[in-house]
Length: 85
Image 1 (cartoon, rainbow, N blue to C red):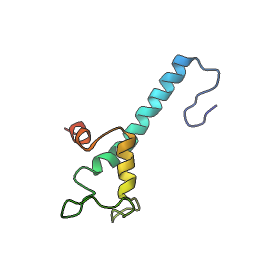
Image 2 (cartoon, rainbow, N blue to C red):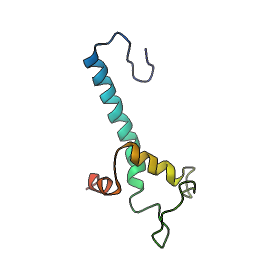
Image 3 (tube, rainbow, N blue to C red):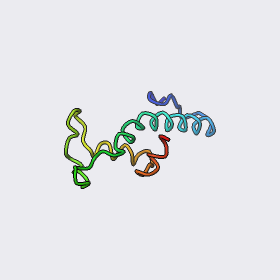
């Protein structure tokens, strides 16, 4: 049994797909704050994109961490903005 998803090798395909679909949705929700944070962030005062390895200041995450979260969700900067409207 997979301890993260609760799936077993003998589960029917439809049940495995439902479990995986649920896990994907859970992960998307977990990543959503990181992706939304990048709206309007990650650029210096001249509009230049900040380097991926530069910290964001108040947390021990990098701009690259936030960008990767947004990419994992399949969201572009435009679709991330639309998702919050």
